[in-house]
Image (cartoon, rainbow, N blue to C red):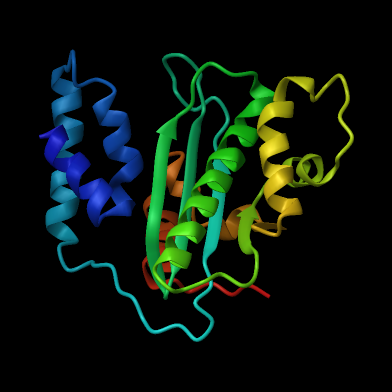
Length: 218
């Protein structure tokens, strides 16, 4: 059951990525509670069967990314979760909800931003091979202003030495104009539900925003 849900989460249903990712963590030793959780996801899919990915012709063909991370969200080991989403032609083309390894709490946002940067560079190269070159930097929306400041600041300190390798890659992408970091307030961070469970109202708002690609970037 989890395997089938993973296929959907990867292929066409980004809205279930976080829930399926959590369920998959217990697939080697599931309990009745985990089975109930999986059935709830299937009931949600049945009730939202008409939801689909939709793409429209884009004038500028610009790729836009969102990067997010929760704070020690796993109740078992207190590890964080990385979430990112990329929109192109009015719809999502790449998304990720992945539990982070054991890292310092200060590194959690760095891990998510580094992962999003790598994905942005890869998609840009793919689009270039497909004849859709990205003439402008890919905008990465980030809701942590501290992470943006560190990424843009070439000077490191004793407090940031443990994240230098990841931020060096982000700074390199910035210097090459592959990405452009922009602050995104938490209330409009549409990658939020890739990192944590949300109440129904906010979840549906974010789902509508990401599936319709209804975002504006200057």
